[in-house]
Image (cartoon, rainbow, N blue to C red; front, side, top):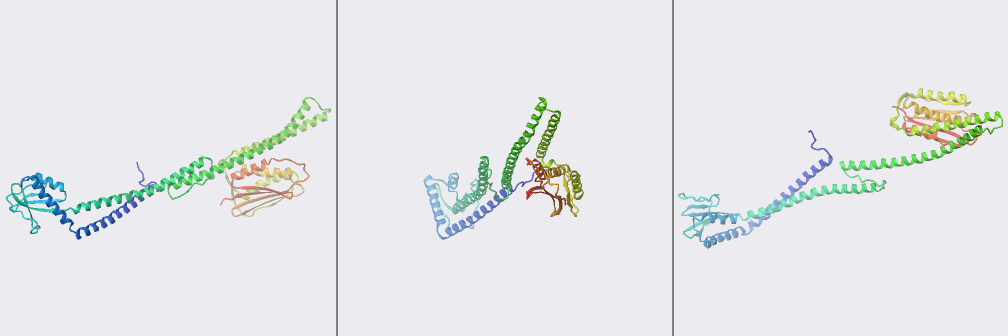
Length: 438
């Protein structure tokens, strides 16, 4: 199984912190060792500590021989004493023959051979009286080593504790951050989605915090969007129910008159039938608009199949389709086309639906005596389409749910564009903005 040794930034930081802690610990150990050895060297060179320890050890050995009445051949008991003392080497001579050497593991006694220690200074031999004979002994002492060992152990302990402390500081920082993230998640779980997640550092924990924060923001946006959609749909249903109830009530009334023959003449019958057909078509128009609205709002932007078109040709085609209808209804128009070549990526069916909605409203509410102004231009990689007409003030008051405009806005959002409709001084204007393809 192939696996990278360093997978994450957090692992790299952990390894670097171990290396850093080890270097600091080694530095502390070397520094303390140098200081400790210097102090011990200075101490041992200025006093008679070693000589005092050596004299004490010699006295203890002579007393040990005397108290136990040792003979010169009792090498096991002599070795036992040497091992107990730890920091001495003992040499025993008889007639200039080395008969005992504590440096030799099996304490072999050499007979028949003269062994003289050339390093042994004159007068460093001490008289020792065994139970069976007298002999000479020479003792080497290393009592100062005990203190060097103690200093080394102390220095090593301090260095190890320093290593652990530095590692704990690093780990504590991370665990504190993890604990903070845990507490902030509990705040989010409690419903306070406005609480910002703390983002610190540059590792996987930071990425995790950023991810949680982005998820929090997305969730807030989604809730806001759902609330707006809920309010809009509630308003729409309320308005549509009112708009549908009015013609439906009239239709039922007309049909009751026809069913129960409450009309007086055949002309009245034809009028009631005509009125019934008008109300039925009005109900059909409203239901079609409602169906169109829910179809658009239940379609995701990603589901739109976008195609690339020549911008001028597409707009010319869309406007010409509406011009025929406008002329049939007695409207005049002025067009200011765009002289810049460009391409645009749209869903043709959806964009045609936007134009149909806009111009159907113009036919319904526009003043035929004033021309409809249509202008489109390119600026900063953005196509802007302006449509403007005068409102007919002679029409009877007509209630509108605004469902067509809401549908257009949803379609434009799916194209990453926007549509803005304004009414000012009896002038109704619509501005459509779309990004052009580079």
